Image (cartoon, rainbow, N blue to C red; front, side, top):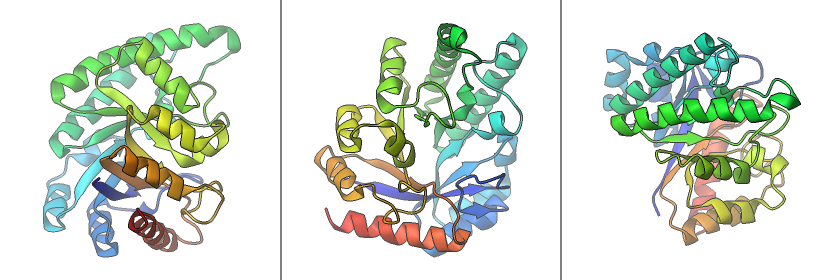
Length: 273
């Protein structure tokens, strides 16, 4: 089992977003290396911000890789979603997602699909929303396959998104739509809200899981809440999960405290298997 530990970076933290570094990505890459992380997960509202010779240089100089690109700020900052009722807005969202895929291909990174899926506007629109999402995802699935990029769909809890909230719902959506290049991301914070049994949900869906966010039940670093991370790590070991575990937790009491403590707790968990 080979697992990379990745630090979440963003150019600007908005509200209570669970990122552990804020500022220029180049400096963040060097910072992640100094702390001892293997990789970085980059969150930018515009994928063009990631086309930088300085960023490429920073990755090489620090011998660190980009593990994934977050896309949620397309929705949070710009109001773009893959299920918008306005076809022009939906097309713009798909176009931007293709730009993330192009960037990910150059960086050999994964692309995360989270809140950019949008929300169901009303109960009577649930089926229509799923159809629109399916159409958008098929387009992106085909495009990502041509670019050699894997995408991962994140289950998000009901208080942040109002559909496709559990790992089982995401798995059903992926399989029903026969998506080949889009897999699943698991986030323990969301799972603590949505899953009856986190360990069973991991076991049942391990074949689809390609990327992981670790945060405890209170969205702090592992060990600050009640999630049984050792059980999760043991399941990963049994099924030989080879991928990334990323630090997406609240930057409390400070960003540096959270980043240091998250890494320490994750390494301690990996030592126990």
